Every structure is written in C-alpha cells, then in structure tokens.
Image 1 (cartoon, rainbow, N blue to C red):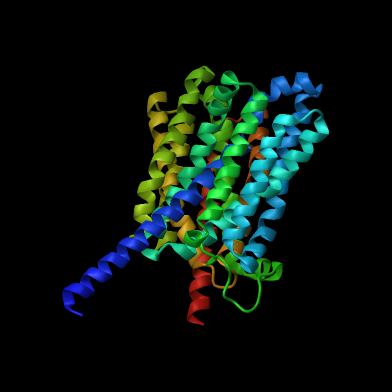
Image 2: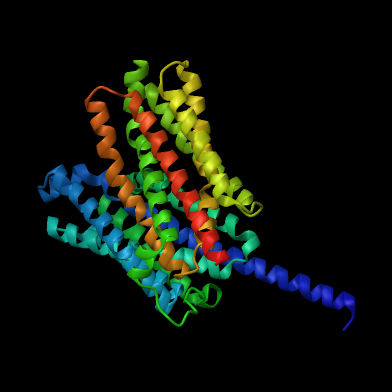
Length: 409
C-alpha cells in the first residue's frame, strides 16, 4: 500500500472517531439536559397541585427534598453498578425510570402518589453523573475530553434554565398534566434512541479491574476525600451567591430586589458562557489544579470587592459577573482533574462519590448564610463565600500533592 493510501486511511479513521465522539457527547449531553430539566418540572405547578391535592406548600416542598435525597443516597451505589455492568446499561435504565416517573406525575390523584413518583424519579436521576462521565471518559479521546465535559456541563445548565418556562408554556398550550406526560415521553423516546445506538455508546464504562470498587476505597483515600471536600466547599461558596446574593446586595446597597437581582443574572450568565471556552482550555493545559486555584482565588477576591459596598452598583455587577465567568471557566478543568485521579476506583464511581459532595455544600452553606443575614451582617455573606472558595483551593492542591506522592511511590 502506498504512503498516500496509508495517509488517507489514517485521516478516514480519525474522521470516523471524531464522528462517533460527537454522537456520544451529543446523546449523553441531551440526557444530562433532561435530567436537570426533570429536577424543576414540579415547582411551577405547586399552586395548582396545592388546590387539587389539598396539601400545603411544605408538603409539596418535601417531595422535591425526597427526590434530592434519593438521588444523593443512590449516586455512589449507581457508580458501583456502572463499574460492574457498564455505563450504557445503567444510563439507559436510569433515564427510562426517571422519564416514566415524571410522565406518571400527570396522572396523580393523591399526595402519596406524588411522593412515591418523586422518590422513583430520584432513583432514576441518581445514575447520570456516574454513567455519563464513565461513558465520556471511555469513548472520547483525551485531547478532546475537556471540551466534551464542558458540553456535558452546558447541557445540564440548559436543563435548569429551560425547565420552568418550557413547562409553563406546555401547560398553557395543553394543561399541567399533559405537560408532564409529554416531557416524560421525551425521555422515554431518548432512552429508546440510546438503546438503538448501543454500538456507539459501547460498554466501555465497565471497569477492567479484577477487583471491584468499595466504600472502603473511597473513604480511606486521601486524594478522593480531598476531591469530595472540594466539591462540598465549592458548592457552599456558590450557594452564597445563588441563594443569598440578591438579598445581601439589597441590604448593602439599599436598592430594590428588582435591581440587585441583575448581579445574580450576570453571575450565572457569564458562568454559563465561560464553560465551553473552559473546555478548550482544559484540553491544552497540564496543571488543572493550578488553573482552579487561580480562578477560584480571583473569583473570591471579586466577590468580596463587590460585596463590601464601596463600588457603584453597576461596577459590583461587573465584578460579580467576572467572578461567575471565572468559576465557569474551570468547570472542565475540575472534571478532567477528577478523571486523572481515577486510579484507585473506576471513573463512574469516583464521579458519583465526589459529586455527592454538592449536597453537603447545599446543606451546610444556606444555614450559615441565613444566620449571617438574620443577625444583620449582609457583607459577611460575600466574605464567607470567598472563604469557602479559599478552603476549596486548599483541598484541591492538597489532593494534587497526595496524588503526586502516590505516583512517585
């Protein structure tokens, strides 16, 4: 065979690999979008559910809590399952369960039907992080892994953004019950499409190790526990901005909520826009932990500068927006760093365990921020958010040092 023929074959192989990667990333990211969309389908209909089922808002809120608790508790066991049977089977099965449960919400006639279906939906939702990341790590080549993970992250963020207006629009066209059945049906169809694309998704998510993953390996590994703490602390830092910055800015700048909410909009919008460039950056740098440290440090400084009340509010909005952009920029670097740490357990199990740390941050952070506001210290909301970011940096860098020592040994 001539040199030109060999070159043509190599080019064709590369093109085929790239097409398969695009298919995998597209399908998995759309499933991720649906998983996040499903988390928020119920709250827009709380008023009508309160009337139809004769329940309180507290009881309705508990259904969302039940969904989150089930997802959090089962996420790591789902990672163990991915390790045993592969990411494809777990992802398709979880998506199907999640979608069916959401669709059946359109048929509920009692509060306990609603609670049971939300618990079931949480079971299905628990598989996405371990299965998604396992498939991406196995099917996407390392030079494009950062970009693939950034697209995956954008999919989830878009699910959060689109869910409330989409559900309200569907309910306006039909009714809330039909809206639930319709959106659940979309997930069932996607699960069937993924089943048809089994050859593309593959079963590479299954661990090749002879020994299995275990809780002992997770909680006794310093590197893994540092990653878990990083997710918890960064989540707590983010909670201050997402849940309390609007009220804190109102008190600091003595402005109406309609004005101070623009700061949160800037924070979230620039964070989303920076995710894709961050994937490109993650594919080109080697020290992802250093990038995380620099971005989190700068973000924390900007949050404090915006929150002390010395700037004109429009400059504070700009500072907070840049802070959000810096956090979004390193999302892919964070995920690639976790991927590189998957030496003791499988990729799916590791992502399942460390991302459970988000729940810890969501539990810890809001209580602290609420206490600070109750005692009349709105500026400390921003200082506390920056402090959590600083602690997150220390855990990430400590984990890198432990990983380097283990590699040298």
